Image 1 (cartoon, helix red, strand yellow):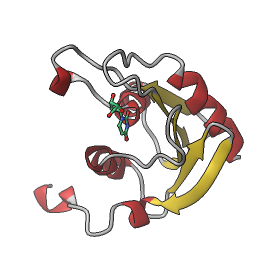
Image 2 (tube, rainbow, N blue to C red):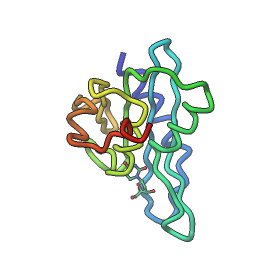
Image 3 (tube, rainbow, N blue to C red):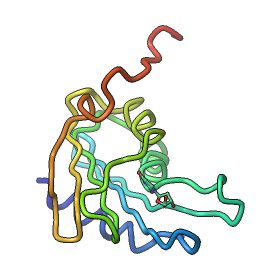
Image 4 (cartoon, rainbow, N blue to C red):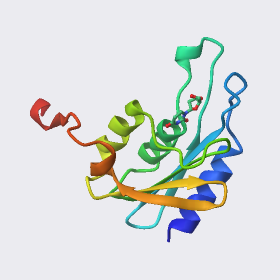
Amino acid sequence: MSHDLFEAAVAAMKHAHAPYSKFPVGAALRTEDGRIFSGCNIEVASYPEGWCAETTALGQYIMGGGGRITGIAVVAERMHRITPCGGCRQRLAEFADADTKLFLCDDTGVVETVTMGEMLPYGFKGSILK
Ligand code: THU
């Protein structure tokens, strides 16, 4: 089950626009009805304006209709077992559950599986704003 997410993340990584960092990243997430959404990092010459692979995948997910997220995979060409940055943890937590599985990958496949709750303990919850 995690392997196809890994494959989707690797395929997305090939689209990375990372001419400045030369650090391509791919992310893929699955909804409970089996749809897969993926994304790559997109850098901009004005560096702070670029964004992460997870964020691109979330944009695809929202435009594709959203839904309950059951798994997320992240891979980076140049890093063994990449973990999402702090901002992406918060963005992923907006749509995933604490028990959603996060598959941390290297170029061979899933290296470690953790939950979103483990990735973002004590994260800010927006429920109070509603
Ligand atoms: N990056 C991601 O795409 N996801 C992360 O979770 C960490 C970092 C990207 C942003 C930037 O394009 C490059 O990796 C180097 O920081």
